[in-house]
Length: 87
Image 1 (cartoon, one colour):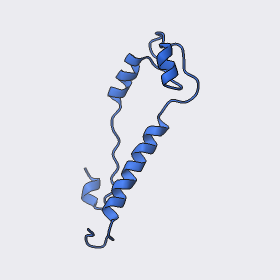
Image 2 (tube, helix red, strand yellow):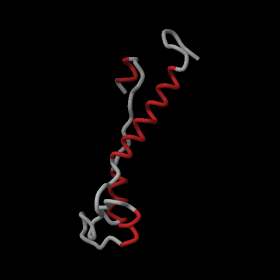
Image 3 (cartoon, rainbow, N blue to C red):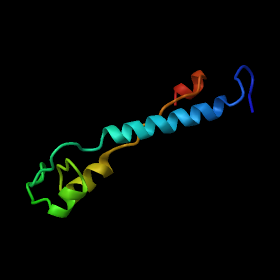
């Protein structure tokens, strides 16, 4: 359904672009390289199973969980109206 000046499928294109951006952002934040033996934050041992499961891991489970809780989701405004940009 198109509305006003937009072409058919424009809304779905915006949804697809938002999903693609979120996937790209998530993939770019994945750790890479060799895993550490000790947590960068607290210095505790990182279990071998975790080091093998997650390539490039730098934090123990507890520290990584705390970091994940502090991370706020980032939203994108793909609408053109000025009112939606002020929120």
